[in-house]
Image (tube, rainbow, N blue to C red; front, side):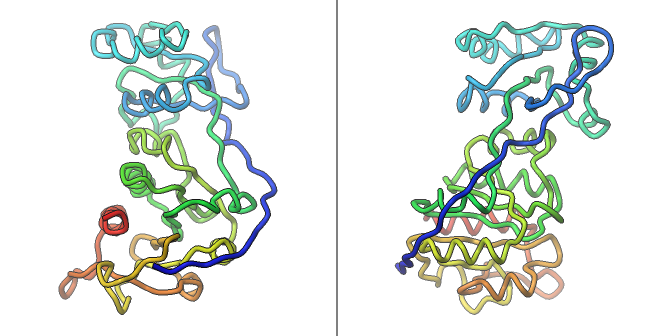
Length: 275
């Protein structure tokens, strides 16, 4: 195993964007500092990780027999579930068109938003072991899969680009089925600069790339590792590769099929890191 040593200072963080919330009366208003989470697994994860943040739990009338465990969790948290008919259920949710196409599963909550960290907070990762950095991963379903993989294996944090990247929307949170609650999420403006900062904290940076000289199994990873994965199709950008200490690859492939979906590739790579 390899080690790096140095120091960096932290400055601040922010919270996730506010969600639009419909009032129980007529019309719709915007309540700042509220996050809407829907779907059984995502709601359960909130109750298990930050129940103090929950402000309302809304249940579609008729779904109570299927949601008994969540109703019990709400009661333990001293939150009274609101059982509503479909029209009121949808009106209060004020789902976007995209959210309407997703499966709300008869339940959603409003909670104070999770903290989204910035590159100024990277110093808080001084004692972390494994970090994922995503280089322009723009597909929401892939982001959700990566968050779920990261949570399952115990990754400490995931770095997202603030621009040119998928963001942590209610859709992503639902598809991640709770994974978004178990990893710290950082939105950074400049990935190369962030990787450089992490190096000063002692991390070794490895880019997942089919051009890597060594496979994952052949690589002696550092005690503190950043694994960088690239966008769908394009892979790692040239500048990002320049900031990696080494490029590593997943063995396999054949003519015309040289890589895996980024969500699948990340799961394979992270499993190897924690093996």
